Length: 379
Image (tube, one colour):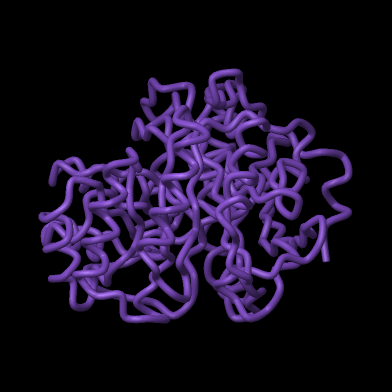
């Protein structure tokens, strides 16, 4: 099966209404992503996509002038993916100024799966066919009352989720308020897994080790699965290492990182208990699996981060099946962000089962079909 063409589309998926969140000065109105189609002489099409905060003409030129010529007329196989990674991804501690071509890597795996008539996760040796999604709930721009947080969790539970991550304390960390929110949620419902993400709060206010320790230790009482990014874990990583040693709750982070060398440094320094590579940032499925293997070497957990829609979510789902992740992040915040938003391009949404899990698609490749109206979202 030989590659004959590459098309890059700019996609915009609007939210139900604009959403003012604590971590952005501008209202959140839409998901913007690049969607790529790779065509073959056999008539098969591979799809991939990645969310971009802003469209990037420099990146588009990079794809058209460097990446596309490298894979055009090549045969589709795993060797091509490895050569692709070796050509365009990091060497040693090297960095690059533009995002990695993750969406093309995902599309290549989609084609390889279709060629071999296997879903990606099985093609790559995965055994786990069901993953527990956690609703990733954003923090509104105005501080929410405890009653409103409880109401949001109840809405999430009724939708079928059995796990939720609260982005809370982004601009001002108040450990006692955060713990009070969690404590009152637990009074109402103890049958939902909870995670707390303070969204790299050190960038907006200096939380410090002592305050982070108080927050982490108090959250332990309420069976919170992890505390995400309370302290710097790359530069000045010593405080995060100390925190991870002092508390029993797992300290997580790494969703915005891309270089495997940096992930290894974090793990070597014991700065995090859970690393959270995002396939949109790491370069795709292959690199994320490699990063998960580094985590195993250091006896740490790898639970991928994801914030985006549609194909990116499905590709992350397959990746979770390969690395045996217990969870997948599912962007959700009614009424602004719903399953209708996240799966707008697909002919069928991913359905939450009664126990709060989702099944990984079993058809070849990504195992999904785009809805006939998907081109309406092209800009």
